[in-house]
Amino acid sequence: MFEIKELKKEKYVNLIYKLENKIFTDPWTKKMIKGEFNNKLAVILGIINTKTKELVGYSFLFSIYDEIHLNNIAVKKDYRNKGLGKKLLDYIIKYGVENYFTRITLEVRESNKEALNLYYKYGFELISRRNGYYSNPKEDALILMKSLKQDIK
Image 1 (cartoon, rainbow, N blue to C red):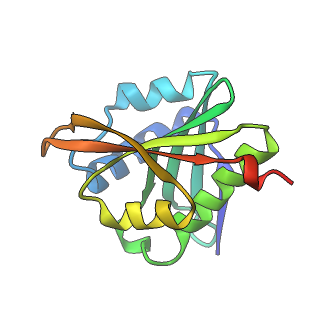
Image 2 (cartoon, rainbow, N blue to C red; image 1 turned 180 degrees about the horizontal axis):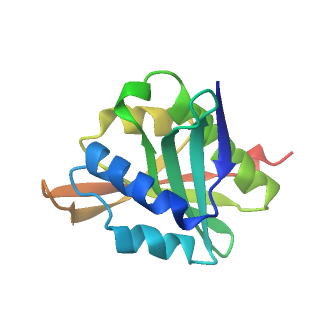
């Protein structure tokens, strides 16, 4: 069983940093992660394995007026293909609707087909491209957006 909760304590910095380095080729630094915990506009979500109490995934959100910018979403490799990315995205969309945000934006590596497929299934649309945005390896970022207006009931 897994639960998603907001991570408010800096005790998660080292855990997220370790996961970042295992998951991404261009991971965030500890300073960047710590900065998110000190940012009043940021929301950090964690996926917790309720049996082991292990942090198995996380996401960094940043609010800009009526928009959520999804800075990062990650699931530990041995926990992938269990629906946890979908569960986290469902939570983020619900959070956005409940807090009256009108859209979600994000950047994703052009080669990250698994993430792109998930985002497209959730109604995200390609709105732009940032050439050479990523390093290690150098790659373009696709900028996606999802309107939340149709999700508000």
